[in-house]
Length: 279
Image 1 (cartoon, one colour):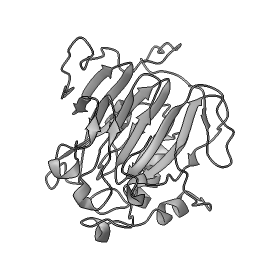
Image 2 (spheres, helix red, strand yellow):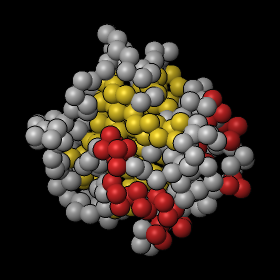
Image 3 (cartoon, one colour):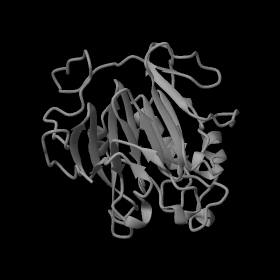
């Protein structure tokens, strides 16, 4: 399986280090090197208008596992180990992103397509998908208990996403700067246990100010080893002031000026519903 660890670069479709960070189509950085305001996100969920442009499809499988399917590439983030109680993920993907290198946290079984493997801190570009890994920790003691975690900012088809991975602490200013601004979609762990809890997650949402926030890593039916340590998603939803907790099967997002403030979208965890194979 091809890899894209750290800042290594390769040709012919391998991981390629990006000198200037993630690309922003049609934009130029300011004098400080930061990119300015991006269009809002158009979201296909209940209460939102349907997108009219080619969309990035987002599917949640449970725990930290998220799939981003774009025009040219499909990215799988943190595919889980089925022994944790969820259905195996069987997909054809081009890129696998791992936010934590502990083999008990992920499994590559069932992933077809000879995907490129990306993990670690650094900047990467594969098949037009730009990725930036920011080193953080899986605990509040600088990794002394559970090791490193990598927050990934991913730009796919002009949609700018951030996955916090197995984050176990609040974010410093340097880490926030590395993650970058103008995040369209933020995937944030909310269940506590070995991750941040709902209150910490809410604080980070307020710091990053995404257009859309998708909670991950919370208690689900069928979980085995982690069930006793995770809270449900309801507490985070309350922190966010949300009243409708009806999960959506998936999201389809494109760049369009429609969302004016952060919205919460709870996605159906496909792995908790015996959905081992997903289109």
